Amino acid sequence: MYEMRAGPSTTGSSGQVWHVMAKHDARATLCGRKLASHGPRPSDQDDDPTARYCSPCMTAFREILDINSAPAHEHRPA
Image (tube, rainbow, N blue to C red; front, side, top):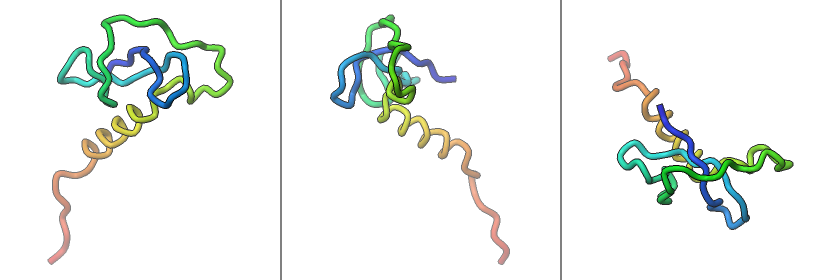
């Protein structure tokens, strides 16, 4: 399971967003940021709910899920 932690936006906008934490480093995000162990909660007041998530983290997380859900090998008829 992956942990989500609040941190500064990576898209140039101000405010806090949810980042996906890397499993290999307790402070590293999937987008490459280093975050404190605890951060402020992103604002629930945002008009666009997707703006509260780090887009690069979510892209990296989707790639991880795609890799982990792909079959180890494909069986093809000879």
